[in-house]
Image (cartoon, rainbow over all chains, first blue to last red; front, side, top):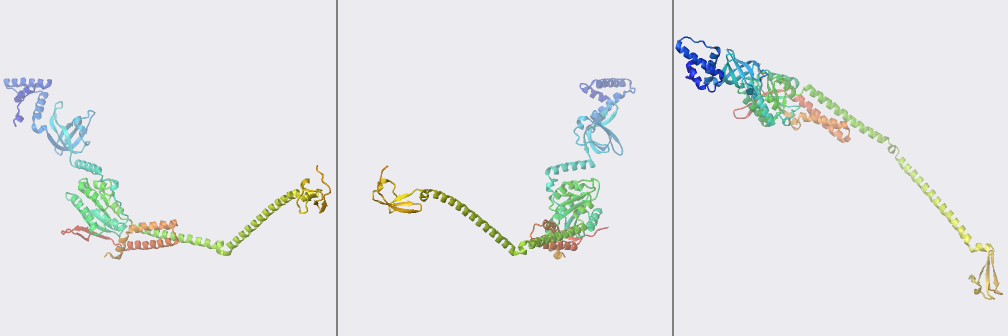
Length: 448
Length: 83
């Protein structure tokens, strides 16, 4: 490359063109070098440069290089530091070499994750010289994680996406049946997981039908095999026999080894499964996307087995106590009814049926007596007021008047004489006295 | 191979039977039912107990391997643990 073959002399010519923009320092450097160059030509003797001059030259060389202007460098971060300036300083290293790196504050702000020592990264940037120290370094513009970091990032991204879609919502979680008859298992046909599952289920509940859909649980084939297995078991559920629950299992491992369970296709297959799914991937602390989508997460395959099948002894105890309770309760019900019957039998009505009738009869008698007394009383009341009236009448009777010495004078036919004008001398009159009557004749009449 | 036990179980699952037993125990416990109804559900409860016990005794532990045949059919064969 022409540019890479720049000689010190050429550099000076180039420099001249740049002098307009260059700062004081570089102007001076250029001037010095120009002068020196001329002197060199003149005297043909070696020239002594200052460190600064030579550093400037090297920097210029590097800055002009197309390759170094934009490079991607892979390595592991070490000696990471971030002073208050906000710039990040670190060394990128691999087995054979090291490279100083700096990332300025404004670029750091665009990082989506925090850098850590030991992290495998790919750093993009330009390589230039830090004049003050006379060292070349990588001025980082972008940093990407590689290896574990990239997987972790992908995990976080998928988790976020599926969560937003609602695949983890509790509303979608299907209940795990308490007493499954058939359990579908998706795992490797060899290894600890299937052995644990078989051992635990056999010990706890030797009444279950286990249906294994063998898959490889890591590597490139794993995701599609797992997806197929979930779908196959769902088909079998319809076409063959009811499958009550699925267990998707894998032993512990690195994030790469568990990766199949973080694949989107696997997550969607679990979500679409009509059969409830229990995930049992890795150890207690390993969480996979499958765990979030599954209807239930078991920390380990053994726990999955315990979740999926109940303990036979427990069931038998349960059943036994239920039977006892039912018998006892029925006994109580019968007892209650017997007591009620007995109390009815003991009641008066049942012992002496005529008792009640006699009681009524007695009541009737009593009422009768009451009515009679009342009537007598009323009659007495009337009788005494009648007496009073008779007394009054008596007092007013003309006969009573006769008793007091008055007499009534009437014609013989009984017509009472009220005035002297009604009688004539010679008339026969009847004089009524209290104790008899006298017939008399009118001899003389005198008007008052 | 499945026999009658399986058919009976198809009408009501073991789980449902256990649930029904709980209900029956509770109904009898409340004592609100007539004697006749009490006896009726008691009979039912005893039947269910028998059914559950039988289901426990009869169910067999079976491990099978599921696979898809080339014809697309689903096949099942006995699964033997490899050492």
